[in-house]
Amino acid sequence: MSKASMWSKNISFTNGELNLSGIPASQLAKEFGTPTFFLDEEAFRSRAIAWRDGLKAEFGSNAGQVYYASKAFISTAVAHWISEIGIGIDVCTGGELAVALAGGVDPSMIEVHGNNKSLSEIDRAVSQGVKTIVVDSIFEIERVAASAKKHGVRQSVLIRLTPGIEAHTHESISTAHEDVKFGFSIASGAAWIAVEAISKLPELELRGVHCHIGSQIFGTEAFEIASDRLLEFMARYRDAFGVELPELDLGGGYGIAYLPSEVTVEPADVLPAIGTAVRAACAKYALQLPLISIEPGRNIVGPTMFTLYEVGTVKDVVIEDGSIRKYISVDGGMSDNARTALYDAEYFACIAQRTSTASTTQSRLVGKHCETGDIIIRDIQLPSDVVPGDLIATPATGAYGRSMASNYNHVPRPPVVAVIDGNARVIVRRETEADLLALDVAEM
Image (tube, helix red, strand yellow):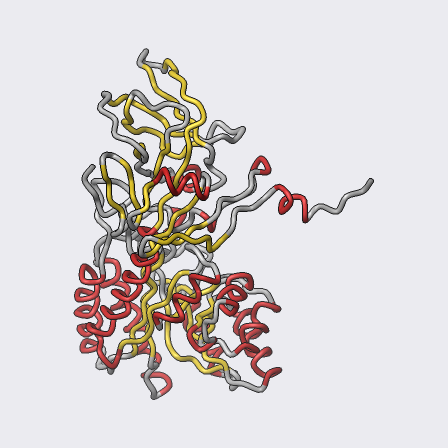
């Protein structure tokens, strides 16, 4: 099998069998069971380093921070890797902050997001000394200021702006047009009201502006437009207050390959164009180049993980046009991959432990849940000789697989196993039925 960019760098196929860092899929399944998320640790580290070094190469001393998206997938092990690599991490809940801190991330490398941060989440972030809080409402501005006053600090903040851009992505993950819950609209004047509110609060230091146009973005046009609109806003701030804001966080959400026809975005594909656009806008508005930060989103972890399933049942179903569709049921499903149900996301899959010379047939890869919508891949050509006991691998499940996993039908969530240099170890253990029962308060 040819290897497309949807597979991580240390995946290979030998006699039809998938190997990760030299370990065959059949061995991985025997040792760790299925379903399981397998993470190519060396690929993860190299992707994070590539974004870190790419930002530095493009912006030099004006390179701000690369922020890893904890919402894509976070564990204490991953947080530790992030700390070692020397990039930042963005969190948007108290739980994500807790994992980042437990994994050893320095609070000065943490950026706190979220459109509805609770009072306790804000207070913990301020008390822990997080570098930046990205404010998202007038209420939040007041709450952050109150917490900063309580702890006797001056808290750095960015304003999340909505520049009115329609990103070419799924509606549920497009975040920079006007009719969304995130940020302050530039066009409506809400953004300037926020600036004025912050200027009256000595407990807050406004460091700059932030924007995130969406996720799974290919190309650079939207980022170029956003750069111009954000820097125009920063010029307005300079004209009003006589000083320039020193930071600009352009967000990110760079796309990855889920299918053989797609290609994962790499730093060199976007950073030069973004750098050119930022410098042009700075010249246009007579601004000094600020510190530029980015948030690659799923792009770091997404391509570095795959899910391994075992086939449980196979059945042929006659569909409306009279043809046969093969339903292949595996031992996971929407509890470990909700994206197909949520976004009509498309994935690829293959037999992982053997070669098949059988002809392919139209197939549907489904899970074990009591739900018609429990579909992993709606339409795919798979070998006609798939049978119970076969292993099926689905690539590019590092982002929003385990992190969105549920216990629907009281199914324990799968483990995450990191593999590097031919060695595999569990970094998030498999849940057990005891875990599921532990939260119940029994009345007997």
